[in-house]
Amino acid sequence: MSNATAKEVAKRRTFAIISHPDAGKTTITERLLLMGQAISVAGTVKARKSDRHATSDWMAMEKQRGISVTTSVMQFPYRDRMINLLDTPGHEDFSEDTYRTLTAVDSALMVLDGGKGVEPRTIALMEVCRLRDTPIVSFVNKLDRDIRDPIELLDEIEAVLKIKAAPITWPIGCYRDFKGVYRLATDTIIIYEPGHGHERTEQKIIQGLDSDAAREYLGDMYDGFVEELELVQGACHEFDRDAFLRGEMTPVFFGTALGNFGVEQVLDAIVDWAPQPLPRPAHERSVEPTEETFTGFVFKIQANMDPKHRDRIAFMRICSGHYDKGMKLHHVRTGKEVRIADALTFFASEREHLEEAWAGDIIGLHNHGTIQIGDTFTQGESVGFTGIPHFAPELFRRVRLKDPLKSKQLRQGLQELAEEGATQVFFPERSNDIILGAVGVLQFDVVASRLKEEYKVECIYEPVNVWSARWVESTDKKKFEEFKNKAMENLAIDGGGHLTYLAPTRVNLSLTEERWPDVQFRATREHH
Ligand code: G4P
Image 1 (tube, rainbow, N blue to C red):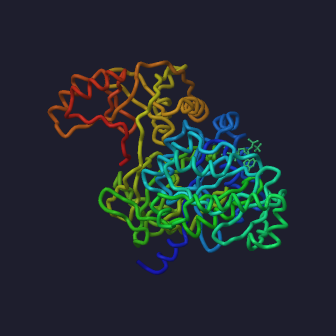
Image 2: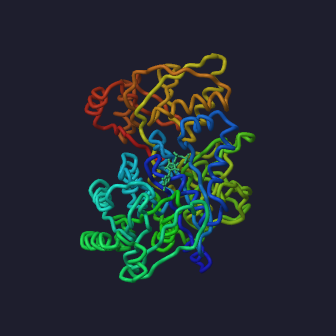
Image 3: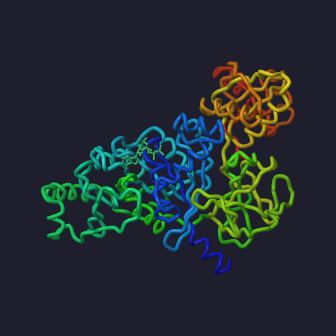
C-alpha cells in the first residue's frame, strides 16, 4: 500500500440517504450539495430534474406520480474530504434498486419526519442496512413544524428499529417556538434563524446553557428546557463511536432541511465518525480498499440518462486501487479486457469526464449491453463480490404485444430492462409466453412506458397464474434431471439464463419443495 493510496482512501465518505417518501430526502440532498458548494443556491437540483422530465415519457411519469425512480450519484468535496452521496428511490416498488445501492455504501443517513417518526419504509431500509451492519446517522427533520415528543421519537427508534439512539443535539422547541438545538457534549446552543433555507450561513452559537445569554435567548422556555434535558441526559445513551461503527448505535440530530438547519452537523458527523471505504467481501477473499490494484463491482445500470444518446450507464463502486483515465480493465464475467477511456463521475448534478478515482468512489461506465448488475472489473484477478442480491419477484404478468410483428424488439427491450434491474423476465420452457416479474406493481407501468418510449413497442399485460418464483439448482445431477422432467410445465429461464420454478400457488411450492429435497429453491440469487 502506498501512502498516496491510503491518503486518498481516508478522504472518502460514501453514503446513502434512507427515508420514507416525503420525509425530506430530496431537500436534504440539496442542502448537502450546498454545503459542498456543489450548487450555489438550493433549488437547482429540483429545477434540473424538471428539465429532464420534459425529454421522456418515463421521466414524465416520474414527475406525474411525484416519485423518484432513478438512483443518482453525486460527488462533492467537503472540508478536506470527498463525499460520495448515493440517492436511492424512495418508493417501495423500487426496493431492489435501493437494496443494491445500499451494498455500495459504507454508511447511511436516516431521515425521519419529526411529525411522523419511524415509518414503514424506514423500517424496511433499516433491515437492509442491518444485513451489513452499516453505520447509521439519524436526522429528525421538519422541526419548523409541530413534531412529536423527541423523547418518544428516540424510544420509537430504539424499540422499532432495534438500534440504540444517542442524541448528539437536542431540539429547543419546535414549530413557531423552534429556537435551535443544544449540543450535549459541548454545552453549546446553536441558534436557529428562519429565512436562510437556501444559502450557507455561519452557525451562530451561545456557549454554555448556564450563561446569561442562554437564559435570555430561551426566555420563558428556559426552565422547562433545563428540566427536559436532565431527563434526556439521565435516560439516553451516550454516543459510543465503536458501537456506531458496529451498527449498534445511531447518533441522532435534529433540524429542518427546508430551513437548512442541522444539516451541516450531520455532514460533519459523517466526515468525523462514519467509516472511510471498508474492505469488501468477495467469494475468494476480502478486498482491502488500500490495495494497489483496481477492483470494483457494478450495482446499478441505468438507461437513458441522456435520451439523445440512448446510452446506458453502469454504476460501479470502486473497492480497491484507483482508476486512471484510459486504463485497461478485466471484465471478470466475460473474461474480456476493456479500455475505459470515458468513465463518468457525477459531480453534483452534472456529468463530468473523470481523470482519476479511488476506492469508495462511484464511476459510470458506458454500457452497450455487455455489463450486468453484479459484474466485477479488476486488473486481471478473478474476484466476485458477494451480497449483491436479486430478489424473487412477487407479482407476475404475461406480456402480449399489440403489434405481433414487433416480437424481436419486445424480447430485446425486456432483456435489456431486465439486465438493468427494471423488471425480471421469464421465458417458460413449454410455451412462447413471456412473463414479467416485479417486486412492486409500479415496475410494470415503468416497463410498459419505457418499452413504448425507447423500443417503440406497445404491450398489454394479462394476469398469469404464477404466485412466486424460485431459482432452482442441485448438486445431484440425476435427481435434478428427474425434477426437470417432472416439473417442466412450471420451469422457465430468466433473463440471466438461470432456471426458475414458477409456482402457481403457495401450496404448490411447499409440496414441490417437500417432494424434491435434493433441489434447492432459492428466493434470492446473487449476481455473479
Ligand atoms: P422526499 O425526497 O423524502 O420524498 O421528500 P422531499 O425532500 O421532496 O420533501 C417532501 C416535502 O416536505 C416537500 O414539500 C418539502 O418541501 C417538505 N420538507 C422537507 N424538509 C422540510 C422541513 O424541514 N420543514 C418543512 N416544513 N417541510 C419540509 P412539498 O410541498 O411536497 O414539495 P415542495 O413543493 O415544497 O417541493
